[in-house]
Length: 135
Ligand SMILES: [Zn+2]
Ligand SMILES: [Zn+2]
Image 1 (spheres, rainbow, N blue to C red):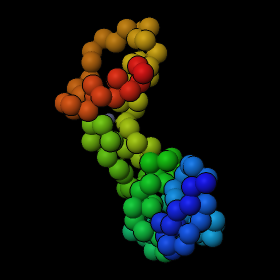
Image 2 (cartoon, rainbow, N blue to C red; image 1 turned 135 degrees about the vertical axis):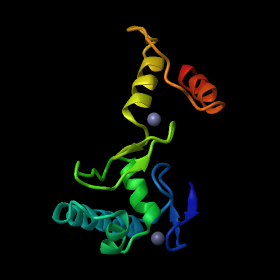
Image 3 (cartoon, rainbow, N blue to C red; image 1 turned 180 degrees about the horizontal axis):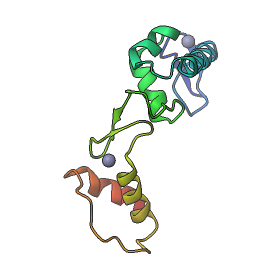
């Protein structure tokens, strides 16, 4: 049994092994906040991350996390963008830009189509990631 302290309220709870370490109450609250944020974004497609955080009283890192998880998707008109975790290019949702995703799919799929030009990779981390993908 994996008993932990809730990240949000500090209460002891039984951790089920996946997702953020939060008790059932806080998870439920977070889900409700997410629905609020999503509704707010629907009504205000131009809203900034700040506004979204205020609208549902959640933290800005939490909003960022939802963007990374592709749970929040911004319209083309929105000014909200986050940097690709690999190359730093500004993107609207997810963790990586399209180019980096393509590169990753190629390295996963054994490079069947043949990559014409290797996009620049940040030094250091890419090797470790390749090894991880190769197992
Ligand atoms: Zn809690
Ligand atoms: Zn990228």
